[in-house]
Length: 303
Image 1 (tube, helix red, strand yellow):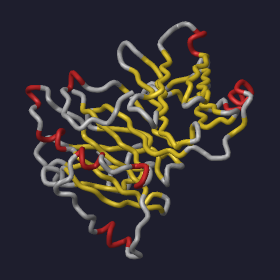
Image 2 (cartoon, one colour):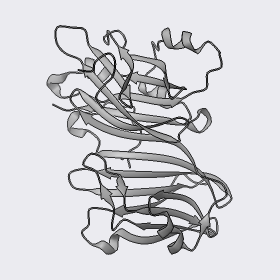
Image 3 (cartoon, helix red, strand yellow):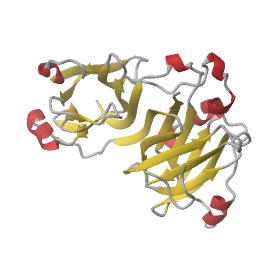
Image 4 (spheres, helix red, strand yellow):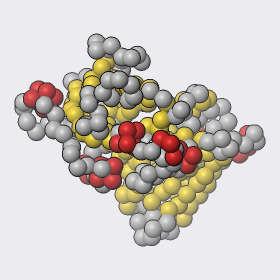
């Protein structure tokens, strides 16, 4: 259990409906960016997904005229190295848009479907790299024969799924979407004492939520490197679903950098406003493109 001074250190869209444990989502992490493609601002969705049988990368570019998207899916499970380096082109309103990738040397951790090094994925339009992922940036520019775009892509949100019993770990992008931080959520849900939850960022305890039976939904503002970050939580399905029928859904968290309008931010931290009626659906309905960057986290309990 965490001490009070410090702690120990998918393409899956956000879903509002409850899912059974047997239908739990694959291990996935999804990023939504916004960039100017074919003279229009469009969302670009990048999903890294892995389950027992599949491991793939999906990149889709929004079609502003229709509901469908321009999608490229790359199989990362295949043993064929030629399939891990490629190019796919789209025709968007008469303009050619290219997706280049090289994942032949990609290295993965044991816990994330996203590679940690040794790869690049580039979205190119008119000899400009609109979006570049991975650490092999020089290789990407050399292969695409393109230069960086003058307008940097904006990261709108990140969504991921984590699994655990009492401990849930993730890398949350905070500080206005620029820096990743280690986040640990520890729980004590069953036993003689009232259920509690501890949230730590970069090894430091930032929030202790007691009496979860009453505070299963809520929010608090915490400080990370002198920047306010709002944390929303909804752990209803951890506490009140029928465990005998294996209907336990995930807990839902949102980490959102904020700019406080009041100068008395200490009062906000000591007396955080509680959310009495918010649901997962209501939290998701905040438009990240207009409200600022959000990190959405689904935490699935395993037995």
